Image (tube, rainbow over all chains, first blue to last red; front, side, top):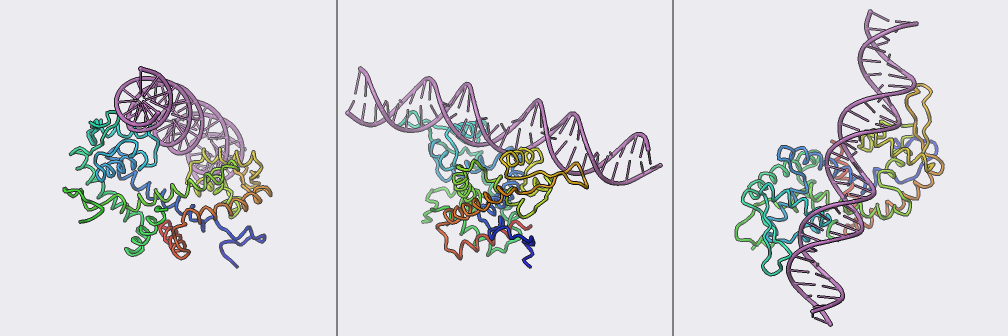
Length: 150
Length: 150
DNA sequence: AAATATAGTTAATTAAGTTAACTAAATGGC
DNA sequence: GCCATTTAGTTAACTTAATTAACTATATTT
């Protein structure tokens, strides 16, 4: 008999464990836990790390675009960038052409911290996916990236 | 020149987009959005759906174990089960052997709704992973499940 | 110049998650 | 049997996160 479902009245063919959405949530939760713990000594949240990385790759980006990249609302971006600015990790520089907006930049200190955090994040990746082979890990990343394109 | 990084001062070899944790979060966010929208007409959250599915596969489960399965704290489980019970989707039945605890069960109505929701969830999976082939989708699920074992 | 739109901010609201303290029942030692 | 300890579930208080609405300052359009 099917060991997964040994009831007399078969519930249905679809099982929770075979839903991608569920599997994604479980996996993401696990990855998140690891990163949150690892970043704790730095008093930094994953989203703040992502923001720093986005700033590095998009120097001068506007706050609204950062918000969009992080999939957060503009008011949340304000709070986030405030914290980064207060800790001298990022800089707001008024645009000369449009004085409503800022260009956001990493500070020297932000760059330095970011590189440290990236190493940690990478170690978390390995820890989270310890059950996978290098090949499988790469394939997983490829599939997740492909999924997110559309 | 590397198209991904065309700055003169190379930021670092590790890119945000190559971190599994980041890719997982993006993918999970996308999957979640789809499910949350699709469940909206039913006034049900993904966690409530998961709870129903867990009840189906584990009839008579105790609240504490349900909480653990959902990775939430017991007080949250109370709120969640209250809602399911109020809507007559789930039943709390006092254990005869241990009168502190309940066995949790799906109601007939809960079973019926669950089967409807599972179809929807499956369609969300397909929508979320529209960029993937059937083969890739299966491989993704396999890798995510393997990742979550450890 | 007036009306409209946009970037960013503030403040209020709502929702979610966490923690601590409590009740009731069970267990274990004596 | 009785007392101390543990466990299941609940309640309430607190903290944090996310959402929304309203506002300022600047740009753009007509």
